[in-house]
Length: 568
Image (tube, rainbow, N blue to C red; front, top):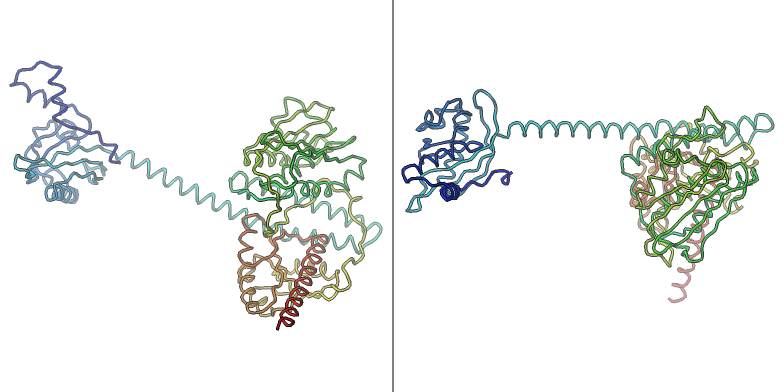
C-alpha cells in the first residue's frame, strides 16, 4: 500500500512553481499556502506537542470545519473521539521518538462515520537534527476497503458453494453408482445363468444399465474438466498397444455390423512415446466411438503420423458426415448433431466435448474435415515430447478403460462362458472388504464362479481381524468403508506383513476412480485401482494376473533360498 501514497516533497514543489512564476519575496509564502490548500488528500503538519500547525482544505473539511484556520492549534483529542485520538497519538509519538517515517493504516470515526486512512508520516528536523514536528499525508481508503471486504466475502461464499458442489458430486457418484453396480452385477450374472427369453431380458437389462453408467461417468468427467482439476500425468507408454486395445473394444461392434476398423501406423512414429496416456487414450477412444456410431457402411481408419515435432492422429470414417455450419457446435458439451428424440443415433453429446478439452489440456489442436454423406476426418495434432526407447516403469494401474456401453447390442454379449481359470487356481482365497450387502453378494457370486473361496469383511476393523500374512491370495478393498477408510486399512495390512515374505495383492474398488486417487492408493500399498462395478472379464483378468504373479514370486523366492543353502 505504501506505493499508493503520492510522493510529496514540499521544497521541490515550491522550487518548481517559483521557477516558472515570477513572484515577489513577500508573496512566496502565500503561493506555497495556495498550493498546499489545493492538494488532494489530507495534508497536515504538527508540532512535537501534537498541536496542528497547518493543513490543507481537505483536512479541515474532513473534520467538519470550513477552513484550515479553524483547527490550527488544536490537538487530536480536541478534534476526534477519545479512541481515535488515542490511536493516532501513539503513532505520532513513535515517529517523534524514533525519528523514522511511517506508512500506516489509521482507523477512526470522522463526522460520525467509521473511516480508514492510509497515511505517510515523516519527521521534521530542526537545524540541530532534533524532531520538532511531523508532516503527514493521508488518503481515505474506506470505500476501497469495503469493496475488498465485499469481494473477500463473495470469494469465500463462492469457494464454499464450490466445495459443497464438489462434495455433492462425490457423494452422488458413490450413492448412484453403488446401487447401479448392483444392477449391472445382477444382470451380468443372469446372462450366465438364464436361457431363452429370460436371457434376452437379462441382456437388455445389462445393456441399459451399462448405458446409464456410461452417461453418468461422462457427466462426472465433464464436471471434473470444467473444474480444471483433470490433472494429466505424463508417462512413457506404448501408443501402438493402446490403439490395439481400443480396436479390441470396438471389434465386436464393427464385425457384427460388417464394418472395417483399420490402423495405419507410420514407420517414423515410435511405439513408445512420452505424454499423457490417459488423455491420448480418451481422445482416440471417443473419436473412434463417435465414428463407429455414425457409420453404417464402410468403416473407420485410425492414422498416426509424425510431422516434424508434432504427433498427428487422424480418425476418419465413411459415415453420415457433418454440415459445415455444425462443425464448431459439436465440441460444445451436451450438444448433439441429431437430437435423441429425432434420430436413431444414441449418445449424450459429451464425447467430443471431452476430446476437445483433453486436446486443449495437452496444448494441441483438433480440426474437422467433413461433408454430409461423405464421412468425416478428425485431425488431432499434439506436441511430441521426447520419445521413449524403453517402456516406463510399472506404476499403479488405473482401469478406466471400459467398452462404451452406448454401442453395445444383445448380439455382442458373450455366450455363457466356461470356467477358464487354470485348475491350480481353483483354491484361490479372497478377502472381499465391502460394506454394501448387495455388492457383497454380487461380487462374492462373481468371484465364486471362478472357484474362489470368499471371506467377507464389512469394515476395516473386520478386515484387519480376518487378515493374516499368507492367508489370502487376493484382497478386494472398497475405499469408502464406514469405520477405517479402505486405503488406510490397506496400509495397516502392509504393516502386518512386515518381517514376512508375504505381500498379498490389494485391489481397490471405488465409484470415482481418478489418476490422482490411484497415485495416492499406491502410497498406501494398493496394487491396483478399479472402478465399480467389477465386470466378469475384469475379475478374471485380475485373478489370472495377480495369482500367476504371486506364484512366480514364490518360485523365485524358493530358488533364492536354495541358492543361499548351496552357497553355505
